[in-house]
Image (cartoon, rainbow, N blue to C red; front, side):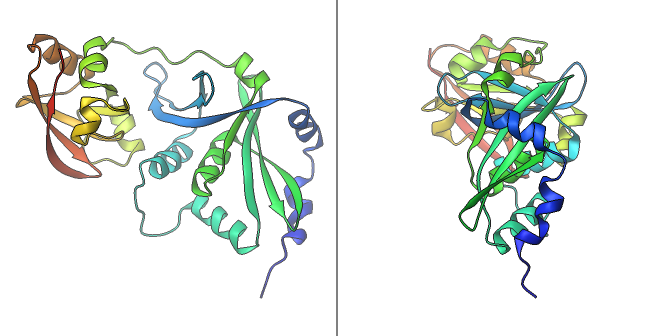
Length: 263
């Protein structure tokens, strides 16, 4: 039996008029998902959006299932059966709907709001949802993600990191964080200790060697790496124009990378 999406409209849009009107009246800028991390203070998952134009960061605290769904998609992890957001994508595509964009519309009383803009039979529908769900679905449907200017103006500061890693960023060309138990569970990783690579600079030595976001560094030059501080301390002791051998877990499989460190 072929379903018509118009039969679903009363359930999708009912009760959200004020939110949709607010979204329509607010300017928005395009963003991309920069990373998914764990707040070291609250141990809660955080998805970090970054504006395309000026690189402003927008952290959004979310629940574990949605954080896992976002992380699985950005790391391109294959799952044996469709998860909830895969199901939503499949339903929308099966009904002939396209996702034009997802928009983070507002932040009120520490709660973020979002809408999905669907194209159906030549018309646009605005569907109220949580930002975490909006982002997870948008990633799966290759749709752009926007944030309203009012959300950016009211955004909370980024979670503070316990250590600084200047040499890790400068010489290795990566940003990383400790692989805590909470973060390992979020990523469904069997590896429980190490350093998670959260960002790799374009054109860096690490990128040229094949290090990618989502890789887990477990050893460097045969030394066990249990924290970002361990990695930073090792790099600080290394001479200019030397090499560092990293043992990493890449998509669940161990591998070894040798990276040339600049001065």
